[in-house]
Every structure is written in structure tokens, then in C-alpha cells.
Length: 204
Image (cartoon, rainbow, N blue to C red; front, top):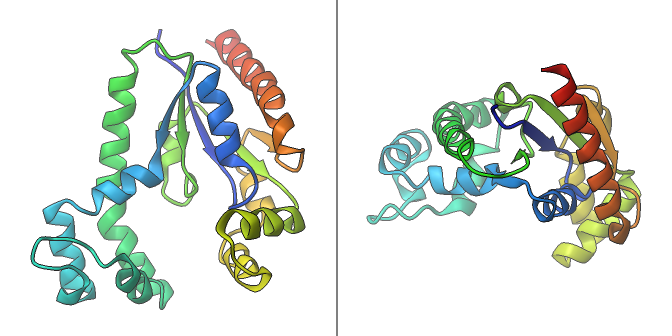
């Protein structure tokens, strides 16, 4: 029997990482899409495409990316952002797909695809279901300020650059309330995981 793949997403500061950590502790294996993305863009072929699109100076002779400069140029317009995604997403998806395939042979209770851009990238197609972790803006703002040691204005800029909670909750099969005290997340996450796995196994 193939292992269930659960897509996990949500806006910054909502508590997604805390849920992922709780599920990992409960016996799941977490595939971190952001980490894979950081590794994928360092592939020589990818660096070459990025340099051709955004300028030779975004990487040195050894292929080390100036991520800050790349971000500045890639996010200056929606067209440029689309160019970046067109170059990087296929490579990221290829690696994510391969990683999930390999993990099917392991002993994990389930495979968790932790992906902030789960729906935007189309990675939800690799999942059996999806969970969105959401929380009110005020709570997210305070968490981001504490986590990254930044002022409220910068925290709100980051929140403003992402979709609203409704984007995630409207697309996910399950929604986890991340506004609870982070110390209480573990129990709630465990309960939700058992519910998801139970419903999945009943349906196959």
C-alpha cells in the first residue's frame, strides 16, 4: 500500500512549521519544498538559465548565487516573477517528485510535503490531500516580529506579499487553526493527523 502524501501549506507566521515538526515527531517524514528549492537553483543548468534571464552578475564564476540581487530583479514585476518560476519550478517539482517516490519505500506513517507555494506551484497534484494552517493577521504579525526580530512595518510587508487565509482554506481539504498557543499545537496536530489517515485508509 502506498503511503499517503499530505500537502502542508499556509501563510508565514501561521504555525505551519510547528505543525510539520509535530507530525515529524509523530512518525511522518517531512519533505521541505523550500530547502529543495534552495538546492535546485544551484544546479549549473539552472544557474545558467537564471543568468541569461536576470544578468551574469547574479552569480559568481563558481556558480554561487547572489540571492538578494536575484530576488530584487525577479520580484520587481509579475512578468519577471513568472520568468523565475518558469525556470525554477520544473526543476523543483522534479526533485520533489523523486524525493517522495524514494520515501514510499520507507517506514514513515505518512509523507508530508511542506510547501508554502503548494497550490501556486502545482505541487498539490503530488498529494493525496492538503492541509492549510491559518491564523489571524495580528497573531502572525507578532510571531514574525519575534521570530525574525523585525519591526511591525516589515512584518506587515511580508504578510501583504502573500495570499489571505481564504486562499489557502478555500483550496485545502483540511484547515488547522494556528492561532492556538504554539505549545498546544502538538496535540491538535496529532489529532488531525490521525483523522486524516483514518479517512484516507477508509476511502481506499
